[in-house]
Length: 474
Image (cartoon, rainbow, N blue to C red; front, top):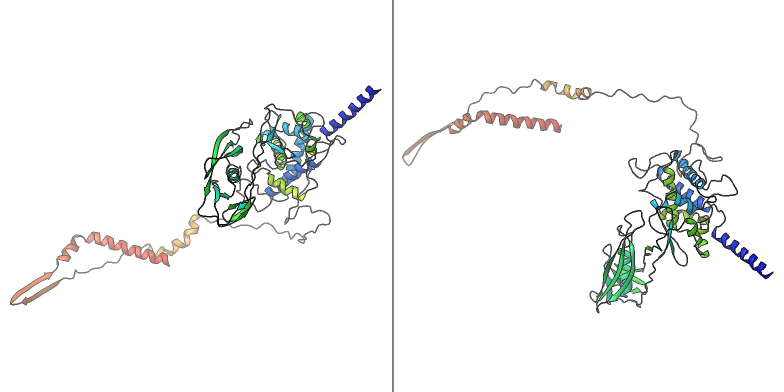
């Protein structure tokens, strides 16, 4: 009897464990993906974008491709779900949709201890963890007009503070964060050592961005110098936990370090789900995870032959910022990890679209073709039956220049009038102190006569230019 009771107890416990590992269906994940795609599509089809903007399509707000985009993504999810195991969860569907193409970095679930999933091209998941480094400002604060520690970031103002290790970590965090340096993913293994009374050396491993989609990454040993500065003094005081940026005291803000891969062995999505601790299921899905999921599904849908929606634009993907904007507007619908690892399609309703379909769009400031019931309708009156305006025939180039040609007609026969002149000469005849002097001024005439052709042409050109300037000025 005791053995039977023990067996029944084990069965009950195993059922409870399995129920926790495979949660019940919840529509929040599908709703989030659909509305994120719709939100991004609405931005791309809103009138006002430049027609030659490569990242946007300049189309009307009621363009049918708005609904076709979301519906196309939904249809693609249903197709994927039909080709995998029954009750397919979102991780299984994302692996089949090729999420590694758009999510080559680790996607963390933020719980008590950070867990990261590295999506591999073969559809498996490598479980890793995040390196934790929690620097502490051991000083009492930065005194006014006192000495300080300084480290340069090369991407902004120097970091000035009272604790050398905190200053060094802050400078590393700024310099090697992906937001400030596109070549890096971050840094690891920070260790600051005092080398003299005025110098600290902070050694760390700089992590390069992945060079390919294989999940590989490169690291290089690097260091940063923190120097003690006695003069000029700090002209602004900062309390403990803050550093001086220019003339402003700001709190230490250390960027998360990049995730470290696990064993290197890829797990199936089902195995990766089974390894999640119970505490992870009730936390919210990380915005990076949700953005990557929406991008992967949109990209997969856009590759289908019958897709009629907006193309997936890798240059303008759904970002964490887009997810945050949506989360603020829909706090109660934001999916949790429990929703993320649940079946994508409702098993009690067949077929059940995992992403709500879209039939129309109404953007602020636009008038849809078919306004909803009760909406204000604009009445422009009866059709006046006025045909399209007829444009005059475009004139030819000859017709365009005809007025100018006619105005210049009187000048066509213009000739320079004949003119006769005599070179002025002079004579002199006088006496000075009893000596007679006489002569004539005619040498210039001889010179002009020798070069009269050149001088005539030059004078004609000058008068022609003067006449042209007068006509153009008029």
